[in-house]
Amino acid sequence: MPKQSAKSPAVPPCASFPSNPSNSTPSSAGIASTAGGKTRLGRITKQGDKYLRTLLIHGTRAVLAALRDKQDRTSCWLRELIARRGYKRAAVALAAKNARIVWAMLTRGENYRPQPANQAVAA
Image (cartoon, rainbow, N blue to C red; front, side, top):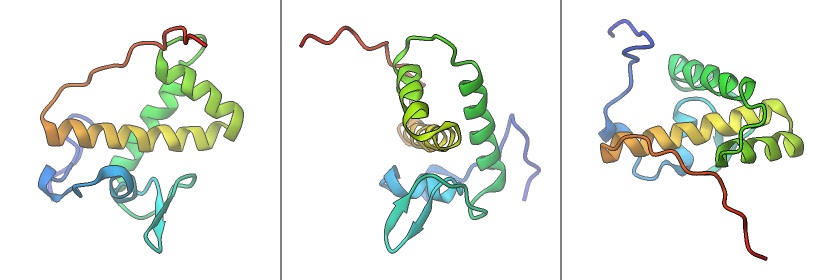
């Protein structure tokens, strides 16, 4: 196996990823656990690709550290999630979300498209 680095991690080819990323992509990185066909977020397992899991979690923690008062859609969602579930579960949830986004970008051959901040919702 070739040596891994942040510039060229050993990411398997897109064909080896499952066709439905909702459950399998985070669990293949060891961010979620699956049992009985159900996926449970909230804990990090030792299964899956250790290096990919490390990159996802470190990236997530960097995002959470720089959260402050940003008003984009992801930052607002993260602040609400931290208030509801706590810092570490929010970190795992964002890492799983990022894994799904990366899967979609790789399979579709697209670049990342950030989502704009939530507009004022009319009641």
